[in-house]
Length: 100
Image 1: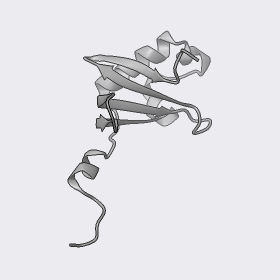
Image 2: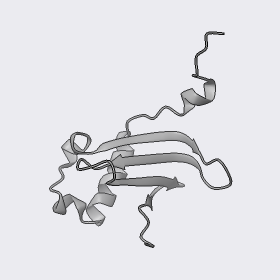
Image 3: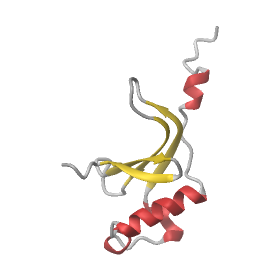
Image 4: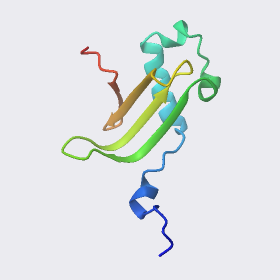
């Protein structure tokens, strides 16, 4: 045994950049929320402006969600972030909650 902490399940937890289809879904959400105009976002520079990663096999510790998750961090501060999941093929914004 080499003492490595990396296991098969840990390898599955490695995030990846969003694919073009995922970026397109995110762009539509950003436009619908008014963020494109408010922050002068450009579609061609989305990955230069925002920190975005996707976890393909995210699973909560208990009953809850299992599936793909997108994490977006805005450029201003790490506290400014959004989390999305997919319900079927639909990208759904889940954090921060609009219920607050």
